[in-house]
Amino acid sequence: MWRDDPDFCMRMSGGELRAVPRRRYPVALIFTAIVIWLAAITLGVLGWWPAAILAALCGTAVFAALIARGARRGRKRA
Image (cartoon, rainbow, N blue to C red; front, top):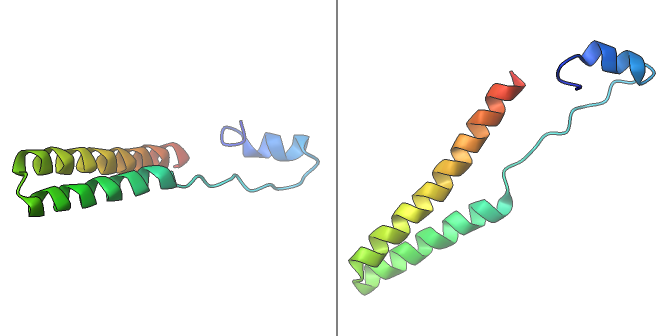
């Protein structure tokens, strides 16, 4: 509601201006993407190319989901 009508919310809260909390990227998803990419590199070094390619694609998908989520949030704020 604050984003829809900040003037109304400010009047109803007694004139106090409260900051809208900023959301951050989920640290768990960032950590997951890093671990998957490290597994892909390890599998590639060991010579298991099909598994390395699959792991790299999964890590890239997690990272792309994070980027898309951030872009979607950026559009909502503006």
